[in-house]
Image 1 (cartoon, helix red, strand yellow):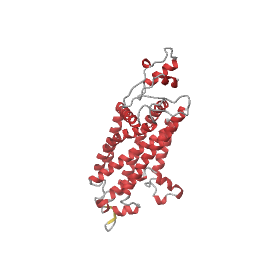
Image 2: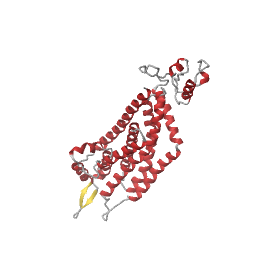
Image 3: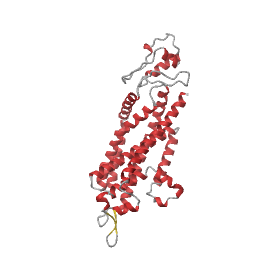
Image 4: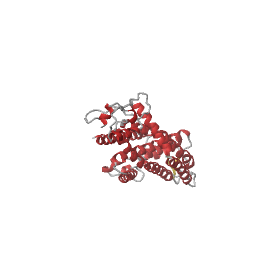
Length: 349
């Protein structure tokens, strides 16, 4: 049916990235279309992208697309933006959640100092750990949205509406500014209320790490939403992996004390790299390494630089760990693309 429809001239090619649809009135086919053909035409009418050609009865023939990948990314990006703006409750809830959490957490850890005026080391480490727990767990709320979009994706790509790669790229690009706003609203109040290093450069690095964390978590959820069959299994697997990553991050158990056969989990943990970035940012640099973080009987027992050396951290890790987090973001998105491509291929079969 699909092949006969397009042989009769129903497919329209749009080279200028303009959205069009297939209309029963515009086809030149015979007037006695059966119900299946009419239903197929109406289905294509509601698709957001024009279709030039669909896979014919011969499954080995390649699928042609009406638009270039650039045009598909542009149109899909506009659709994703509209979807975010239309779900105002989710959008406003995510924004207010970041702002309120930043204010509440900032007032809880507000300049926690001891009698000598020194900031509590364990208190700040606890703040860093809780920040990562909040940021990485809060983005899992997007799982049902990803699952719903996956069903739409499989339906539309099976009709040749657009490429899977265009969908993944557009989805990634749209979330970049949205999650940057969330990161900014969380970081601005909490950084200055907690009393972290009073340096503008250190603040922007903290903001960059927070942004990388929410992007990494978003990519992680997108990957497993493509893999898991339903919401219940997806939630169970994501929660289990998040807990395991947190356990092996180095906060609860030091790296040297982790059994050798579990060491790989320490390096796979998405908590490890941002947690250590926070420590380097706070206790490194000219100000941080000369600041007393632990007092002794006769004076300062440990400076910031001594603490970093004790943890096996160096100033150069500050940027290499950011590169690793960026690799996680692209890696999870690549896995998502591979899994979705396979699912769409199976659905066409």
